[in-house]
Length: 461
Image 1 (cartoon, rainbow, N blue to C red):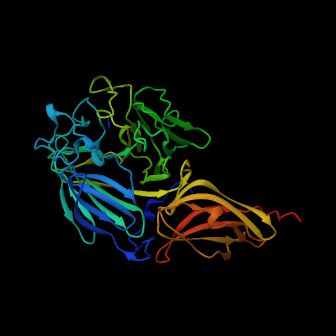
Image 2 (image 1 turned 60 degrees about the vertical axis):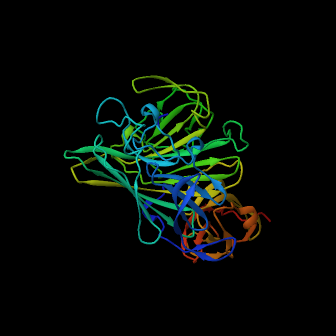
């Protein structure tokens, strides 16, 4: 194991008051000590999503859940075990606890300027210091690693009234000489079949491509076979679709859109990661996003060919979604940071992700057509990141608002389906643009989820 299209990162939401959809009561996020699968954890919850953090397990974010649905893979074979003092397994092996962690990039085995893990006894295998900050924010700090010359820390904060987790990761040069690394967040998603047999054949990931990619075909196969059928790049939509088929492989992309989405097609839940792409920067492997798939086959690593085990205990059903920051040259004592978010929702079974905005994701295209004089029929399907309301606004050709619909209640745990929530909308003949707008529970506008130009030709009489 190796482990609008653009979303403006500056518009990341501040903390808002949550509206519990089941009770209609305000509830801020809460942080408390807990246990998860026998491990000591800190539990952060806002009534919509729950995060379990295991500081002893290399500072891992070990589980993230929307209501009853868990997104991350947490190793059941190690449940309840504490890491040994060495930070390594028997014979110096990798203890793969699961969840999400920080690693330095690039990975490689050709010298001290590359990270040869996992395993890594310090940054990956040793406990992190956990500190509760103001409110319900939690800071995790690694031990100092002499080999890489760095120390990691990250602050996790839950956005109230939403399904959003914000992570501020920091890497500090603790050496006496310059060091050059990127920050690499590695998230292991559970790709088991929900019925308990084998892998999930309906697990998909969506990565927007780069129209000006420095990779000849828009992506690069980093590990495994060069013709891996799991990695399907659509040259028309410029979207990489990763379909998990239990084959080992890894793909890298210089994706500039600022989002990637993972979909469990069986349950209809989506796990989205948000980041900011920095044009012209030196990214490890030349990639801002990488995906690894556990499975059968072989890879070249550690200077040799490695055949992957068939046993799901040794080689579990896991997809790794990985974000990378640009590589930074750090003088002694200098730090660099990398901000990213997790945003989760439910869109319904069997739907893809076509686009993401600050408010949510599109699973079926937003369409509007005249069905009667003065009446528009709407279609489209969305997953939303906020508990609050949505409404449709109608604008004329100059952008002046003509009218808007009454609001409908929305929540991340339920898809927003236009045919059901807004079956028909009264619209003057001067309507030229229709917008779907999301507000949080306090009525503050989050943003436009989707917009569509309306045909100027009137309904035929």
